[in-house]
Image 1 (cartoon, rainbow, N blue to C red):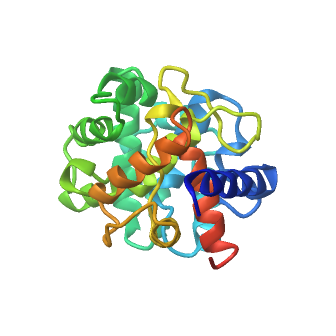
Image 2 (image 1 turned 120 degrees about the vertical axis):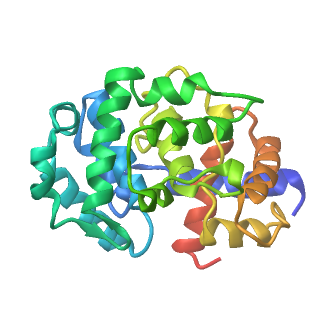
Length: 254
């Protein structure tokens, strides 16, 4: 395909998948349960954190998370204390367990109390027209409290060559602002042009077949390469193509 043909093809797939029907089978349905900004972003961050593996299992465990928080994520986080630890004991998603969740609640409380909230942290560290340095600095702040070393594996760092798929997906949810009704667009201080496409097995394989990506590993270098290609197709909203790449891979077996 020529560049114009590729853009036309992918734009059509964005329209096909970037609509409310997408929500029904995607973990983004969980933050869509809320209307308060802080509830949406906290629920979104926690759900994105456990978004690996079987999608049905992700959604079921995300619903359990919401129940644990009494369907009020921000209020729960801000009033969280050590005495709540026992109530978390039953939670586990793959290698993310109740000890990890306990620290996540404590750290989120610290971020909202002392750092102005999640949006403020990510906005503060934007560098070189990219959000990847923001993710690196976010991780440093997120783990500034005493914690178990094992919990650090649940927050990726692109400056250590991770694709940081789940955080890039979370950022897409918070930042992209269109009329489709899937992404929230509640973070007004960050431009959608800075977003990176969440890179996983599905989007990576499709990107390679479409010659948008040549690197074989799904790592930070591949994210940078894919960013460059997608920004040539839409410099203002490159991450919209996540819908096309993911949809082609998961739903069409492209």
